[in-house]
Amino acid sequence: MRLSSLPMMLATALLGGGFLGAVFIAGPAGMVHLNTTLGWPHMDWALARAAGGSLLAAGTILVLWCWGLFLREGQGTPVPVNPPRRLVRSGPYQHSRNPTYFAYFVMLVGLFLFRGELSLLLYAAFYAIMIHLWIVRYEEPGLRRRFGRAYVAYLERVPRWFALPGSGRARETSSPRAPMS
Image (cartoon, rainbow, N blue to C red; front, side, top):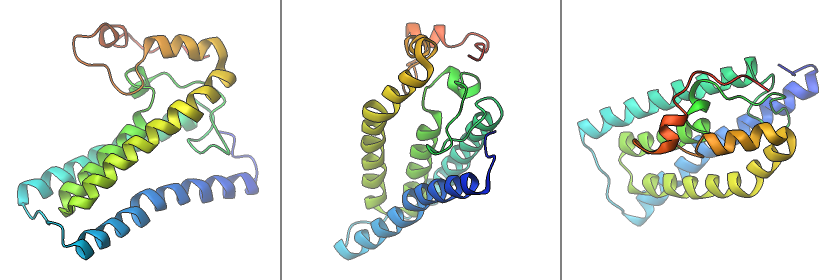
């Protein structure tokens, strides 16, 4: 891990916390208010709440797993001011190049099911579109520059999100852990 100075630790915590606060507190709070203001439907089903809670828990577990891999194997964090120095290709990164972003989406869908506001489903869809654009336009080109051929080989082997069952990529990515670069 490269959190070698107090300013770096503070910058990492502020940026990471700011992103999570915006995505999981400010955004949803605004959407709940919008749902109420517009008089949109509110789903109140026990089964949906249970499914939503399960998705929130599963997404949180996946996020924590990914963060641990970034710290231990990547020797950095998921925050751009302190990015990993090594390309992480193990664990969920064998099956998806973006399991953390996917986990955040799962959590937002879980929040929609748990709370029941239709606006939260629209928010989850907006998040998915915005994060996809961020990955394609900013993150992937930056990773190509940082990790070179190792990242290009990873791109060819592992799908951006997840491989569909029965696709060639699903078979390729089910191999044992790839060595770190």
